[in-house]
Length: 314
Ligand code: FAD
Image 1: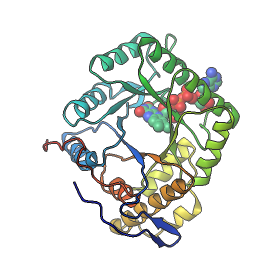
Image 2: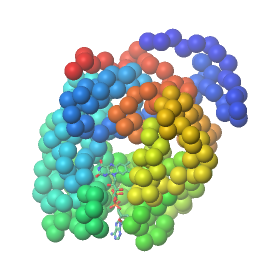
Image 3: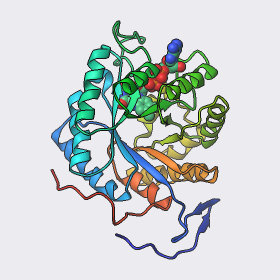
């Protein structure tokens, strides 16, 4: 354990940095994806070892397009629970699978001791056109949530979209969809990443006005590769503000400065959300520890003695 130091809160550039003993209590969760090679898998477990002492409320593992990572997702989730002692959540999508197939995967999770599912519709693989539900499948995430709850009492988290899901008929329809997912049994929403805290706060207000009372945890993406973020944001509907482009301008060949800028941007985003009363954050780690760890540190989080144990290198 690293002892808490008695330092005063500091105001730098409009950001209040947390003081030692009076650090705000925040909860974090970390998202990982199943790596494709043994080298990347070893890197994932190094990341997990680094982040585990921050005692995340849960860690989640994504499910590749159309269930393509089914076995790998399962193996990682199980190992996170059995060997690292973290509280894992398995992402599960319903696209391209019958209800019976999806139910079978869910039952296997329950039998392995996994109690938390992030229930999603999923997207067609790249270039495969628009979404068509499986003829015998759950059509939307709300149906999947209801199906999971029929199987057993899973803890279920779902996705939410501060900037509206790209296929939604309207912003109001999208919030109604979130409400349906919660009514079906979801106890938490995790948002798509965004960069402007006001976008999230306005969305949260709309969701609350529509009767969504569960926690809506902001999804935070520390920017490791700006060009990639720009490409991905165009597909998922996240706005990349001009000020963000300006901050990364000229840093293509300067990884060191890019990293510092990325940590500062995400930390400031979180601090503004904290000031608005948000005390829980979900980090899209991209299987890297450095930025997420630094941001959590800035937010006042410190390794705890009771944190889950570190893993041996693989
Ligand atoms: P839904 O909630 O079903 O909504 C999809 C769209 O359909 C929305 O536009 C909604 O408004 C609309 N809709 C819903 N119900 C109806 C209805 N009855 N009639 C008409 N329209 C309706 N993808 C993966 O493949 N694997 C992952 O692991 C993964 N993890 C994710 C984690 C998070 C936190 C987030 C935010 C997204 C994740 N995704 C993942 C991406 C997700 O699968 C896509 O964003 C997908 O397009 C929508 O999934 P959903 O669960 O939000 O769908």
